[in-house]
Image (cartoon, rainbow, N blue to C red; front, side, top):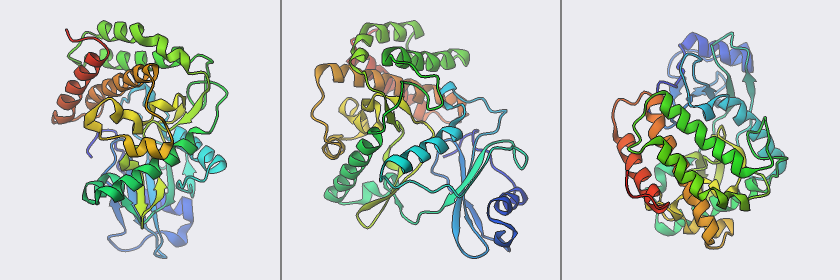
Length: 328
């Protein structure tokens, strides 16, 4: 997926990174030792074959001169911290970090190496699988997501802080950050920004039901799940995690927006009953937040074609209708 946030580096810099991480004896020689993994939307990722034949993945954060959305700032540090938490407190398979560098001397951004996992991306192969097999994987994703959500925080908000005891305040601030990003770049939502704020305010009382901060991945889509021989082999891309309400997790999105697929198998694996009336309102607010991001990020990513923007604007209008607004 093309984006101006992808911080591509020349081969000599990639070799220098390998040398720093693994030592001079592992620096690749010859040709065809590196390829870009193009499925991601934000960081650039390379698959690299070391001199001894072992394969690793290098992730590099966006260049500092590229403006990212507020919630994306410091994303690689969030990912590294999340990996530590998930490895320490759960059995969910996540990548091992071989080496991380935040010095910004070899390139202008954070970067880290992890082993390459030889497995299929569920977001790519899912549509090719028999329905029962796909449902089985989605159940496993639900169960894994629940284990991640079992990690308790000391307050709501970013992993590094500041923390807040009130989820309503934290989530309201999250939406306001997204709206401010959109206003700064004059992104047309198809809706007046203050109307969106009014809708959030009208339903914000539903957020007060959430009292215990839990680690949420928020970005645990099928495309961030690697599978092999009927099992989850690895969950990747953890840079959007925070302490919040587990109902904001991606797997629940389909309960309100049909375009995101059926959430039944995920919820079965998670062990979550049908949503209550208040949970349904909260989940619709979380869909509102997501669709705002998906509209606004197209400008920050420098998309040259409008398919995501057009689709996300339509979905945003649908969510506004679920929240009681049908007029612009």
